[in-house]
Length: 333
Image 1 (cartoon, rainbow, N blue to C red):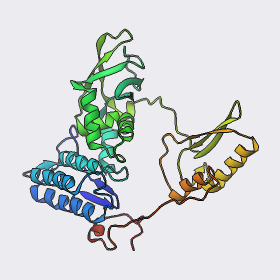
Image 2 (image 1 turned 135 degrees about the vertical axis):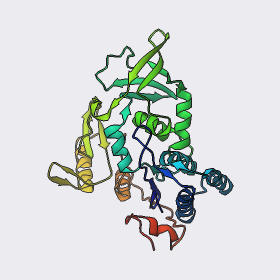
Image 3 (image 1 turned 135 degrees about the horizontal axis):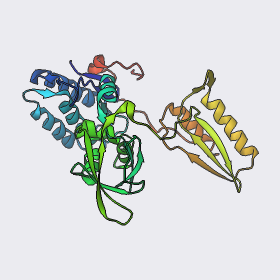
Image 4 (image 1 turned 45 degrees about the horizontal axis):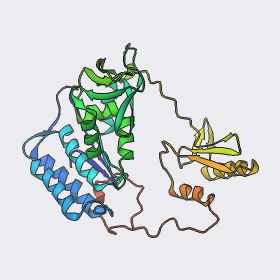
């Protein structure tokens, strides 16, 4: 195996280079087929939901299409793009293929990126922030129609073809595109030195704006820094409160360790003591975490008994392809 490290329900493709970073590594047909055999074999052997949303025939067709294209040499990036489309068809938010940390580091240190942020609302993209020192005429909330000839519709369609998501929902895919728009463009479209954006101004007049790509270190992020507090309560008027849960994990505030279950209990004691009648639970940008912590939160919202799972299913008890995995997190019987 040459370029893929396998995780249980997580697949990471190790890309050694991308356009603009010098000579790309070319994988031979033999190397590509060897890696793809492991990629496909591990999914078919280990993934319990491989055919939940795409039929066995549909997944086989997707695998076979990639298999047939593995002829001659291919770059790491080209291989990554092929595998991304296969993974997306599984429709499982916990199964994805990603560039290696080495590749991401090279992108962030040496690769020019589009220094703006966008917001996607009802399948339309809007300019949100300028994170560079460039003076731009495009204003926040103005709709972006194109980026270097690629319509936003086509970019969103491509995003939904390569990003993983749960079931048939597209919300997660759109949010991933929104959050990593500049990185997505580099990995799946190209890496130009400048971007010509076509947009609508406040009078619905079509205009264009050239935005120069800059190194990541030159991008001045204006986004709000995420707090290192996983649980917080904000009391509002009229006996309302907002419970924010940023992650279902224990955490540290400075050098002090915080236990999720203990802090959750304290939060609900505060809420009950304040005689709160309406509680808003804010899970935006929650990164997930320990499942029993999520179930604990649910237990505060009902007086009825409930089951966290009807069943937990492993596809097999012994895994031929686990030897290619570096994970120790999966419990295998």
